[in-house]
Structures are given as structure tokens and as C-alpha cells.
Length: 319
Figure 1 (tube, helix red, strand yellow):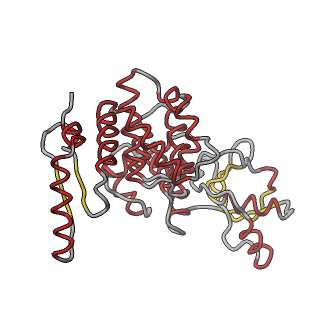
Figure 2 (cartoon, one colour):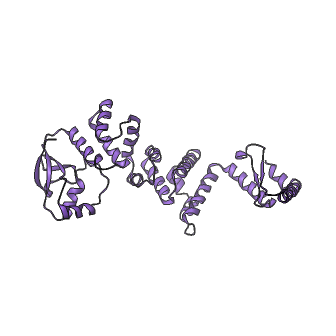
Figure 3 (cartoon, one colour):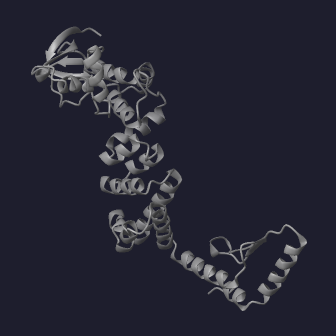
């Protein structure tokens, strides 16, 4: 990298030019303390322009110096006509070789590289040299994250939303991905529950021909989500039940009917009566546990009473 070490007035640096920004971290507290005590150990890289200088790397270092009241910052300055492709590589390398990039930073880096290196085999080789993943399929997936709305990117960064869910949200309209991400983060649900809720919401939207924002602002749904008497655990379960009932109304009705009759049968905790899967068959299941012959005799008596119970026959007679 051909450059000159110069002291550049901070006022001459276009800190609003994010062309080569990789980092998502905007904090400067630790950097300020370090610079105050030891000075600027690693000068930022600047590109000379017709109107001044643009940052290639060291955005936070420049900001920290500015907050410390410094009027200038020692910098490695690239010539005005320095190749754009090499500027991108310097920006990527300066970040990826110092720390592990989060998914959004990696997305920025991969998109920056793709913008300047169109040949895929060459891009893969360069990615490996710059400390980036060089699996073409993975690179394509991660690169797509750059188009996500801000709140979804934030959720990816703090790992509230996984890569697989972020990729699913990336295929949706910004309004939809934003509202779904907000829901997932508010409820603090894990990946499996996110996927289940995501599937239910999309299927209800398609089945009822209703937009996702309209569905999630529905009066019944909204009342559950904002219920001040529900803690997060109860709210999660209530929303899950609501979505399942709305997606599978017939199954939900059958389940409610089954549970009502089962309660009337008063089987206790040691005997479990199971309905046909999805209430689509005719075969019921019955499980019971015992630790001695006395308990088995009790269960035998309970089963004899169960067979004669008219509620059992009613439960098994489905329209």
C-alpha cells in the first residue's frame, strides 16, 4: 500500500462518506481512553479527493480524536487516483484481520468486494486472503443481509435473530420484516419458536389474503400483545395459541372439545388419553404408569369405569 503519513485536519475529512465503512460499532469510549493515554497507535487510512479526504478505514479512530478535541489526526494518505478496488480491500482487511466480523459487517465487506471483483473464482481467492469466508453459496446468503431494515440488522448483530431467520426476512417487504423482527425481539423467542411463528403468520396471511401488518395489528392479536397482566412467558404462549387457532380453526375446535371431555372424565395424572394425530384418524391412545400391583388394580378399575362413561363415547363421536 503506497501512502504518505500526514497530519490531516479533521475538518478536511468527510466523515459522512460511508463508502468504505465496514464496522457497525459506533462507540468510541475505549478508543478515547487509549488515545488519551498512549496516542494514536494505528493511524486511519484516508483517500485524497478533489475536495479533501475520505476515510477508507479508521472511522471510529477519527471520531474518537474529534471527541478528544484534536484538530488533526495522523493518517496514512492514499493518492487521489488510488485504485478503488484496492481501497475496498484495504477497508476489508483493516477490519477482518483485527477481529471477527459480525454478520452485518461481513455482508458489507462481501458486497464491497463483489462490487469491484466480478469474476467469482478471483473473488473467492481474494476473500480468503482478506480473512472472509470463501464459500460462494454462503457468501451470497450473507451478502443479501445488506438490504435488511435497520432494526433487523440490529437484531442480527446482537444475535436476537439468527442467520436463517434473517435470510427469510430478507425475502420480505421492509414493512413486513420490520414488524416481524420487532415481534420476535419483544417476545425474546428462540430460533425454533421464531420459525414456527414465522410460518404460521405467513400461512394465515396467504390463507386469509390479508397483509402481515394487518394481521399483527388485528384487535385480538394486539390485545394479547399489549396485555399488561401477561408476563413475557404467558404472552408468548397466548400468541402461539392464537396463531394456531387462526391457522387451524377446525383442529383447534376439535382440541378444545377433546380437552373439555377429558377434563370431565377425571382420569387423574397417572393416566393419559391421547387423541388421533391432528384429529384426522380414529385411533386414540391410552397410557398409564404404576409402581406396584395395587396401583395397577386401581387403574384397571378406572379403565372399567371409563369404558362405561358416556362422555367417552360422546368424545369419540365426531361430526
